[in-house]
Amino acid sequence: MRKRSKARALALQFLYQIDICNDDEPLKYLGEFIASSTSDIDVGNYARELIEHYSAKSSILDRLINNVAKNWELSRMAIIDRNILRLATYELVFDDSIPPAVAINEAIELAKLFSTSNSGAFVNGILDEIKIKKNKLRELANDIQKLPAKTPERAG
Image 1 (tube, one colour):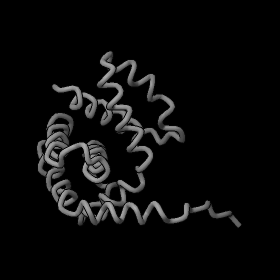
Image 2 (cartoon, helix red, strand yellow; image 1 turned 120 degrees about the vertical axis):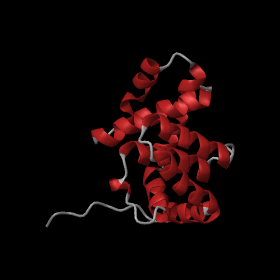
Image 3 (tube, helix red, strand yellow; image 1 turned 135 degrees about the vertical axis):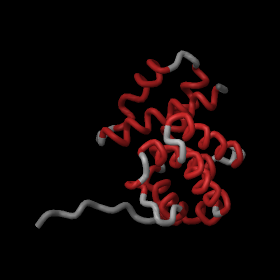
Image 4 (cartoon, helix red, strand yellow; image 1 turned 180 degrees about the vertical axis):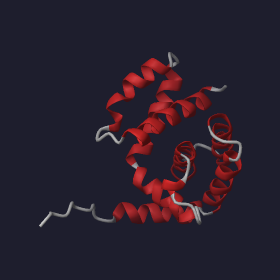
């Protein structure tokens, strides 16, 4: 497995943990996780980069995926599948250094490796749509980022 493929697998494992733990500070264990998971500095650095970029844009990525995944809510997707989609959507929409075909193929391989026999086709279908709508989704992401942050409502 190539270094970036290993890093994506490592990032996926960490995002899975974040998804099931509901921690207020999900990145507080990132350094420890990476140090205990790989001795390859390049793998660790790219995994950290993916996780940190995902974390900075998590709500935007979820909205972009929901915009494309017709008849599928993220909450109904398998945890592994939705985190694969999150990583690949980040690469497709926000990282121009990764060719779209590479991002999609890597996501399909992760789905085949970590999820169900149908997950590769499911992930491929959604990511193909994201690739097609990339420019519109990037505009939507920019619009979302411009919105004022919601403040918590007070109980009355």
